[in-house]
Image 1 (cartoon, rainbow over the protein chains, first blue to last red):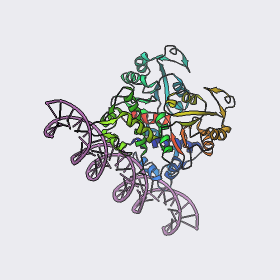
Image 2: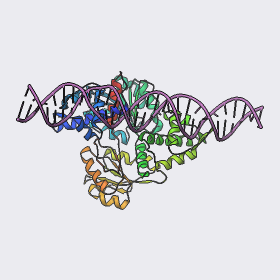
Image 3: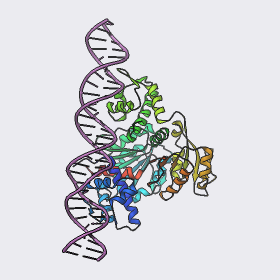
Image 4: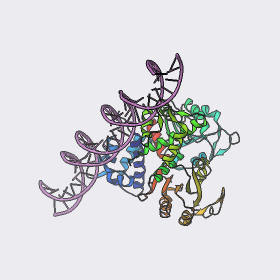
Length: 206
Length: 206
DNA sequence: CCTATCTTGTGAAGAATTTCACAAGACCGG
DNA sequence: CCGGTCTTGTGAAATTCTTCACAAGATAGG
């Protein structure tokens, strides 16, 4: 099986959203050119990306919105929903928790953890916040697939180790820290400061 | 002037953080190998990245932590602080606002906007929340350089247009939408769903 | 059935990025 | 002062990613 680049996967995810919008707007078919236009890329790029996984279009016509939606969902592994844990019930954790779009897109938050004893036991939309020490037991019991880490940088590696030990296979990290995870565990970082610094660079070089 | 790739800039930003950590740990010098190790890249990559901007190291010795810190800060345009506006005073906006790390890194939030009339006027740490309609006036008066957009997807383009019209030159967008900005305005997107879908893909292909 | 018009899928070319590999500078210990 | 040991800076090679360009399938209209 050939290697799929990170950027190709990001674009697929983007196409998925564009297709959902097109579907909501009632479109039956869509061409690589239209997808490219809306996604800020080129039609050749769209076709190349899709061709990594098969031939889904009809020459002269484009792609069936419905079919492409379901193909991309299947490529990305979004047919069924994932069981997610949220670690860190601070402001960021709270914002992420109440972002109901996750649910709609197949990411189901089944457990919330925090290290602050005063928060433990609090109810968050039907879930009771658990202590970090319970990560291992709860993650196993709830069969959690992936976790969102929204704790301060100095606690991030510790909770990550616990999550990995409990069998979590994917981690989305919001802490400004380079986490170490064993091979076999997928890791993504969201680093707002880094993005702001990217803007700073762009503004600075003019 | 040669073109600097997006990924090179991200890595510089990462090196900056690693250097700050090394500095806090009392290191005087650091080698490309150590930076690579901590940053999850290779020493050749580190040297190549730095060589895009000059020769900052000493053969046999490595880089002076202090000097490299100041060089990278200057490359990224972080010598002085930026004046930032936050648009959207919901949960995410609140989480971002209270993330004091921005301040420490030179991003100074000078204005907060929200479309909800009930929030307008509320005090947030010394700042009064303003209405979206005031964007133009306030951004000009406060000489805002860049803005963080933390509003729902369907409002994102509208506030962006207002920001751009008022002279903002950089936008960090958290809404799941592809914003259109004129050439000359820098745009970065943070899209959590997209990252989760990336994890989904990784977990799915095993 | 034939022509005009679309749009895909894909090798091949081109561009960009990363890795290699090594000459040369810098320090250290004796 | 000299040999040994580091580590940088950088051309060149290798790899990865993007764009080009076109044959071929598909439809529509006459």
